[in-house]
Length: 438
Image 1 (cartoon, one colour):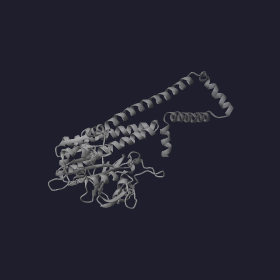
Image 2 (cartoon, rainbow, N blue to C red):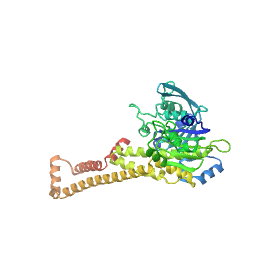
Image 3 (tube, helix red, strand yellow):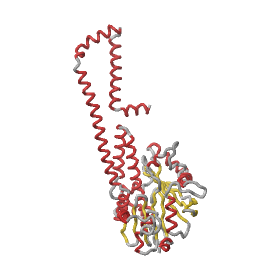
Image 4 (spheres, rainbow, N blue to C red):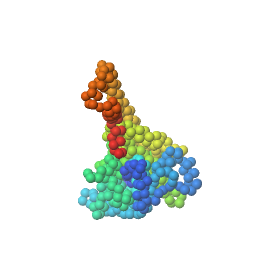
């Protein structure tokens, strides 16, 4: 039974690998885009035919459609594609056995978000007639950054060289990569398989392919089989809308299995799977990784920078924290389940609480400074020396031999210096900004 399941071959499949690109500041964004155009990429402006545009408008809400299907006028959410086909000779080692498998990248897509972390995706094909057992082994390897080819070349370096115009994905001591702080140790996978299988194998197989575990792990027949409680917990994020397919949303990926659900009547991969559902997954990843980024930034910054970061975060939420994306139920269901798998709402709530606590702490700190200055002014105003000021002025003029005009100039200069000192005390980061700009 185990061997029969392992030897199943999909009629067709969809495999997408997803990784992170560094955040690009506003002022350098278009320059960044031109880099990819010079590297052979073509900008994707979305559907151009009126019928297709109308269909998209009738299907998706404007907020989501603008971000993931934006047109030529959009300079904040930009997509590029490159259809150069290249082969990576993946080496898989199991004990003393070693095998080499051809992994073909047939398309690379870039999803760039102005001022935020971007994403890239590789559409992958494998050698013909591969079994799901072999496919699972291959995907388990290529989701790791350091998978090796037959020349001992790292997978992430190969991607950088061949598809990312040399943009590095992994940090070194001499070359830190911001996105690498949030990417973890693995790429993300979006997969779908059209298979013929027994109904009793369905959920176990969904677990196996979704987690790229040895086949039959979901049925409890391998050493890597999950605990029943863990298995049931993962399946809570199952998308089961129709009888002929179901999907599993995980922290590290999205996987769908079924029969006769991937191709249209002409034998072409359905746009829903190749674009819409995939971009729903991408949008949720984009949101997740940028939450990571803001959380990291705000923990590193001082009070004034933290306030700026807080304002940027609130602006980010206003643009991208949307609850529904479609007029149809299924895209909304996938959107919700992927969000649950990534634990997005919990993170948003925790981060907002952190922001509130930070704002309170900053306000208390500013209030303490203000109180100190008020006490200082009150103390000075109570000095009896102020009543003797004319006499003090005469004594100073007599001692220094200054004219009253000279004394006035020096007093004004002193007041400017003291005022600057007080402002620096209250707003040190603003003063530092002035000097940096100069």
